[in-house]
Length: 147
Image (cartoon, rainbow, N blue to C red; front, side):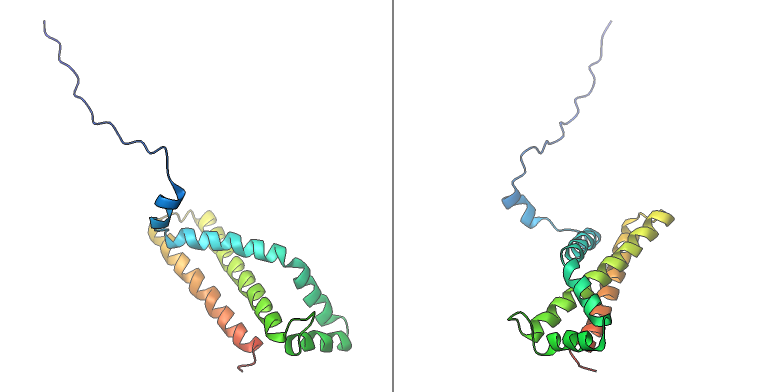
């Protein structure tokens, strides 16, 4: 009686020690993961700038005098910072809100429709990026007085 030996399978490589400085810079992130990371960053920006957002809202609707003070902060400056710095800060808040909103809609659509394919992830990431940056450019042009 002869016994046959099972075929020898090749051993799979094991990656245990990944060097963050050597391996990660060469890694190419997919656009969907970049947009997802930007969604988290925009949420953090909105959370950290919440006092500024509340101040802007409160000052703009309290009275005519406070609205004049609000608009003068963007033209003349405030707290030893010139007006364009405050406009850039407001533009950052605008971008964070628009990106967080559109990326949140993207995530909700993917959850409800079970749209988890590589192609849909890439196309929806491009749409999110184009829509949020386009609206930010339009509102930024209005903020800086281009129209």
